Image (cartoon, rainbow, N blue to C red):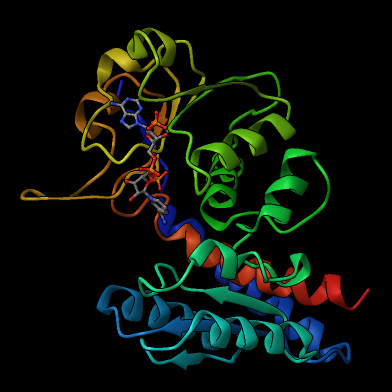
Amino acid sequence: MAAEIIDGKAVAAEVRAQVARDVQAWVQAGNPQPGLATVLVGEDPASAVYIAGKRRACTEVGIADLHRHLPAHSTQQQVAELISELAADPGVSGILLQLPVPGQMQGNELTALIPPLKDVDGLTPMSAGLLAQGAPGLRPCTPAGVIALLDHAGVQIEGAEAVVVGRSDLVGKPVAALLLARNATVTVAHSRTRDLAAVCARADILIAAVGVPRLLGAQHVKPGATVIDVGINRTDAGLVGDVDFEAAAAVAGRITPVPGGVGPMTIAMLLRNTLSAAQLQAR
Ligand code: NDP
């Protein structure tokens, strides 16, 4: 039986359209326009592309584009001062520091300066702590996108056996915490896990966030399981995920493709977080 494909591009477009409607309603109700301050330090070409995509997406949904660019030779102190200025500015709903920052700076220390109510990337130690404790807060975008895809596909999370392969602070750990908060029974696998296939084959929901092209195949997938592939790997054969799509799709019940699965959800959730941040600050 061929698996149902979860179309992340279509779900992301729906989320973006809904955020646009919600922003319009928020502003029509007399509230100030939400604004996202993306901060780029230096000229890294990949970062410039990512930032351009985020800025364009903001404009499309009616969020003010409050981009700031500092030169590559800036000091840690200068970037810290900019983040403090944006933190204190009531017109700025969300702050996103694009990583990596140039070598002379400590990206983690700078990110930690973003106040929790403006942390639209959800990656500061404070936001991670709130998530770990199950307290309200802004959640990291890619992990939140994974949950949104599961919900959209009608996957039952409560009580499900979920296996997350990967334990990074960016994806694996927050996905695991979000699934736990939704009452899944969660196992986190990593590079030292013994018999990865046996662990994965228990999963009703299998999340791959590894960064190894096509690591997970048919033997890792329980028949009928939902497989969410977060991996984005550039290979000679083009962009591929952490899951061998053809092999896994023959066994799974539902599966996300790469590209066109989790990838498009990240910016959609960033937009959702920016509106949520504006609303939290207005309370
Ligand atoms: P990291 O490199 O930070 O973490 C990878 C994790 O995978 C680690 O926990 C590592 O284990 C584990 N791992 C590595 N090799 C194996 C193996 N052979 N078996 C089991 N586990 C293994 O990656 P990220 O979490 O940042 O990213 C994961 C993937 O997701 C990447 O392909 C990345 O490009 C993609 N990504 C996609 C996004 C999107 O769609 N928008 C956003 C962010 C990431 P250990 O801890 O033991 O070293």
